[in-house]
Image (cartoon, rainbow, N blue to C red):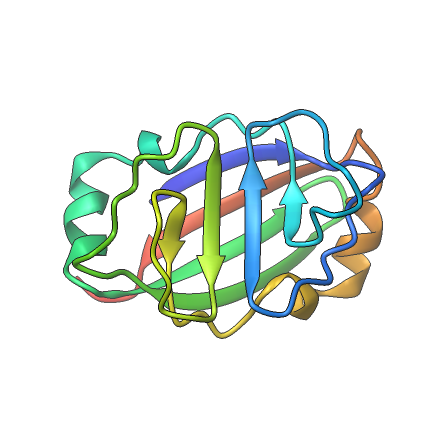
Length: 140
């Protein structure tokens, strides 16, 4: 299991059709419509070796998106890939496509930013809102 803690931002819109992102960056322009959390405490480069091995086997993973202060949660699934690079210093990106770059965590996801529970998205428009993104393998 791998947890990323981040926070909301007034420019979060979560309208992107194919990707979802959490970033260590603190600021967000309205163009960042795939981003659901800023000021993250980790990026893909922080993923521990044991999970990297499972991701590179192409296993199925679940991501749980939780707003602990509001009791709200959403989940999505996606897959690792042997081609994952997992080296980006600030970003974590989940994709519906199979595209891979240093920021990519999962591919072939069943959800992108626009598919996230809209109640969660509304709460994420406040910088005080904390978001927890938990990655866990569904296969071992």
